[in-house]
Image (cartoon, rainbow, N blue to C red):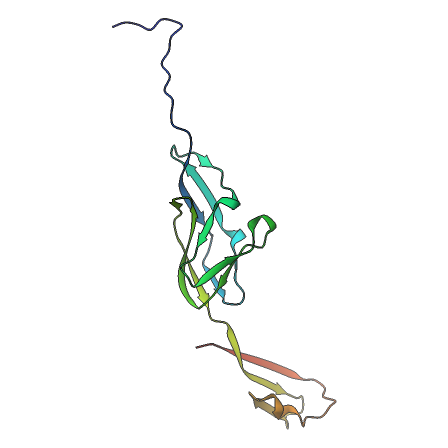
Length: 157
């Protein structure tokens, strides 16, 4: 066996780093009403190269995949990145950069609530109105003291 000369050594050159894996996460359940949306700035994004080391992720290079029941609007750089519901249901959120797709996060889009009942009662128990029709309240006195109100909502179907 020939020993290397003191001025010689072997060099192993590895291929350049590239994004190999994406991981997104959120601490909790992602659930929101159609009109409210969800703040995507709360999602953690981690990229890893083919050697398992951290890999920097830049907003301009990625695309959110939502499965069709939601859409993404805004920009993370200005703090208004939102997942907005298109229809109610369950979906999976993924992040895609080039050909690399992250793990999926389940989310639920809930239908917005609709006002079904408005109840107003006066301190005087002789008058009480419950109705879905606001015209019912036209004949009430103009000076009403101690009004208490409750509102009920139901989901759209």
